[in-house]
Length: 273
Ligand SMILES: Nc1ncnc2c1ncn2[C@@H]1O[C@H](COP(=O)(O)OP(=O)(O)O)[C@@H](O)[C@H]1O
Ligand SMILES: [Mg+2]
Image (cartoon, rainbow, N blue to C red):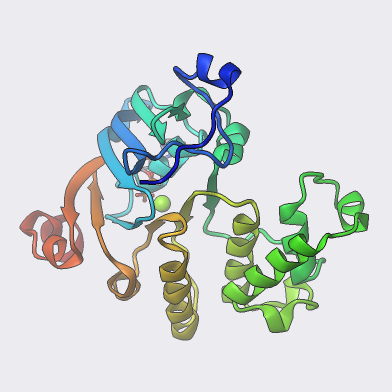
C-alpha cells in the first residue's frame, strides 16, 4: 500500500509513454522492471532472443548463464546503451526505456556498475562520493561548493555502508581492488537509484571481500532493487533469492537456486561443464 508519487497536471497529461518521474517510479503493481520479447541482433546473430523478464521492486535478483548468453547485452538494453530490434522494456508502469537516452535512464533512477572500477584515483574516497552526489560535474567547482549537513550525513552513511569510513581521506587510487569496487557502488548510491545493475561485481575480489560484498548487497535489497550478474556460484549461493538462468538470449530457467541447480537443462548448458 505504498503512496503513489504526486503527479502534476502537466505530467499526468503526457503520462502515456516515456514519462520520467525522477525518484518517483510508479511501482504500484510491485514490478519495477518489465522486459518483454526483447530481441537484439548483431549482424544477424541474436544476442537476445525474445527475452522476457519481470523484476519486483526490492528484489535481489541473480542472473547466471554461460558466456555469450546475453547477460551484458540485457544490461545494455536496460540502460539504453543498446536499442532492441523489437520488444518492450519498462521501468515501473510508465517509463518506456526504449525511448530514453542513457542519461535520461540514469536520471530516472537506474544505476549501473561495470566490471572495471572507474573511480577518480587522484581524489580521496570522501571526494569521490561528494563528486558523485553533485550535479555540477566540473570537479573543481563541485569540490569548492560547501556541503550542507544533510549532504555530510549522507556521505557518512554511505561510507559506513560500503565499509570505507576509515579510508575517507585516502586517495582512491591507493585502495584495494575490492575497496574500489565498493567505492564505485557507493558513488552509484549517492545518486539514489532505485534499480542497481551490477555486472560481475566480485570478479577479482578476495574471499573476504566477496563475503563483505554479499553482506552489502543483502543490506541494499529491499530499499533498492538489485540485479546481479555473476559467475561465482558460492557468492550467488550466499545472496540468492530468485535466480534467472539465461542461455542463448532468453530465459532457460528461473526460481530458487536449488530449483535451477537441479534443472537438467541448466546442468547441461552451464553447471555441468
Ligand atoms: N557489440 C556487439 N557486436 C557484436 N556481437 C556482440 C556485441 N555485443 C555482444 N555481442 C555478442 O552477443 C552475445 C552475447 O554477449 P554478452 O551479452 O556479452 O553475453 P554475456 O554477458 O552473457 O557473456 C555474444 O555472442 C557476443 O559475442
Ligand atoms: Mg557479460
